Amino acid sequence: MEENQENQEKKRSHMSKWVKRVGIGALATGLISGTFYNGNHDLPPLYVRKTEDGGGIAAGLIVRIDEGVNFYGAVVAPIIHINGNLYGINANLVETGDVGKVNGLEIGALDAALTSKREYNRQVNGVDIGFFNSSKSTDGLRIGLFNLAEYGRYLDVGLVNIISRIDKDGEPYDVDSLSIPITISSSDRREE
Image (cartoon, rainbow, N blue to C red; front, side, top):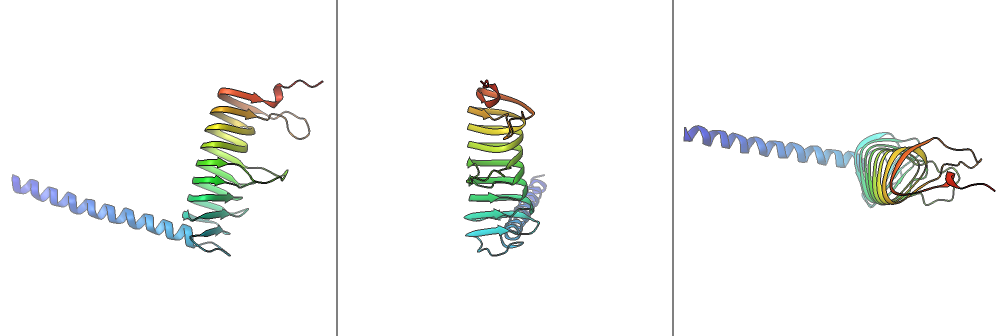
């Protein structure tokens, strides 16, 4: 009986070693393919630029996804500039894209476009967690101290939630949102 238990324990430990090895190998493969492939004019891992569709785990000091590019997987960097489409996880300190779309989870301290362009069209479909979250359109859940958006369907949980319901032509946007606890809405202002 004891011999049988010892054999089972050996099999489990042998199996867990292989599971760990396969997991580490898969993670390394995803990291290598996401960081070093489908880039152009970049210097991985300092500056990773995605110019073609691809996937994996893109990790670097600065990661950029160009307009029209679809990336499937995770992007992990202190500074991220998404102008394409990310399907997966965006983990950052600062995200500066102005026309990109994140479909999945975005975690960061500051998610806002550092641009003065009127073509600002940043979108988040999923969950956006950070101190300062800013997007033109959000469909999902946003958790942060300050949440800014123009339109979408979402739940805001933050200290201050600012919703701009009027577009540049003065027409109201269709907004279905619930904000907790403080909401400032530009459509509540009365015109004189």
